[in-house]
Image (tube, protein in one colour):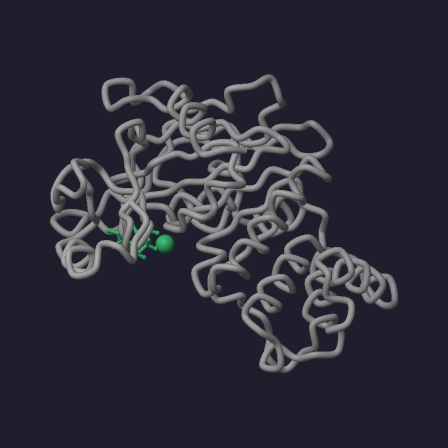
Length: 306
Ligand SMILES: Nc1ncnc2c1ncn2[C@@H]1O[C@H](COP(=O)(O)OP(=O)(O)OP(=O)(O)O)[C@@H](O)[C@H]1O
Ligand SMILES: [Mg+2]
């Protein structure tokens, strides 16, 4: 997939500021797995209330890789936690279509139904891997399989199969502290697959990985979507993830915005708006996320690829 294609696909489905109530649809005929309407989260109340996510509409299709980007504090993690039934919305609905084709509204489901809903529907991948240090790679995955109802040798077998799938069969007995960041994140991906969920939710999955390991991880997520028709929703600042996304949406102040006018800061490679810090270079206007990046660029422009 190329970036231009991604951007235009996302733009086609992305409501502009004046079209806030229009759903950000998958843009193709695949079946929606998640249908989000009017999703809102307000933390706190009164003078200290923070509107982290504001009336967001979104459709996620099966087999789709959706990347949600946006500046720090724009509501990405809050949105992802609500999608995965880890955080109660203040308002709105999240209909999830399970493998049995039944729709459930996560936002309205009773608290006692949420653990089962989560374990049948979602696999979670976090920035810091969140593996248990005392357990081997296999055991970390087997524990997750246990929680999803697979026990004994079946759980061990499942863990071995999944380690193989993420290319880590040779690290089965290693503990997290004995593995590289890239390996730990692949174990975390295998763990997220332990219950064979239709949806993977990833929060900054490549943030702690170097360029090549980040790219490997991104390709693995793409493969899991393609081979299993799994939906993958990633929230991240990482521009490398655009390469594997079907759609890229831009979240700002808790709302989706048009990204047609976005450009890349050549220093930190973040998507930025064409406002604020900028300079002219070789008859081009180069935009930056901050004065810091602009300064860095100005000191040695030839070391960056605009
Ligand atoms: N538990 C909380 N209580 C109060 N405010 C919160 C809480 N969690 C997040 N916020 C606020 O909600 C807004 C959105 O936060 P969120 O963590 O979703 O942003 P983000 O886009 O994931 O940022 P980052 O890129 O830094 O991870 C921020 O203003 C944040 O300070
Ligand atoms: Mg976050």
